Image (tube, rainbow, N blue to C red; front, side, top):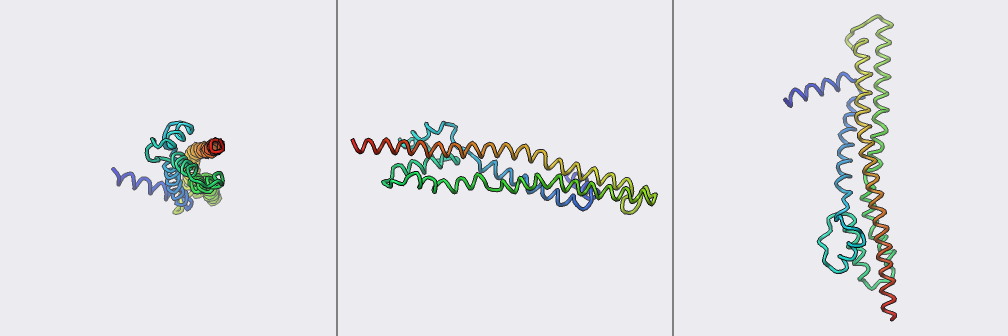
Length: 205
């Protein structure tokens, strides 16, 4: 069964012309990148940021399981330190987490944009072959003829859209998740800084 699928896929790639291999390679890279982003953009606990900050201060929360959990643990550790530049320290500590949320985003977008353009390039190549065959009245030839040109034009368009459409949808969903995590990181900074002010007032009293 696998061999039949492999043969069918290879025939599909070969009939589509020279752009099919780059599109197929881009498809593989894109799904790897999206899978990596889906795995890395883990929030962690389902509790609210306020509840998590309270639990980490009390020391009752478990080991961090995601980006927001890790950020809150770092923020609470900074809060418990004696250093007064806590906001700056948290921005510096959260910088690697923010970099993780952005990683490979541009690569995924580039593949989504380039896949249909490569498909269009293959379509143009197929149309050129088809019109060339029409001019020489060759319905079938060694290079494909009219039938080969039409097949190449359709196959490349199909594969380009097959790569771009799901990549665009899932990529946008992951971008929304990235924006939500970054918003929660800002909440962590504001909450920890508010607790810092409360501690300073208590120390003065």
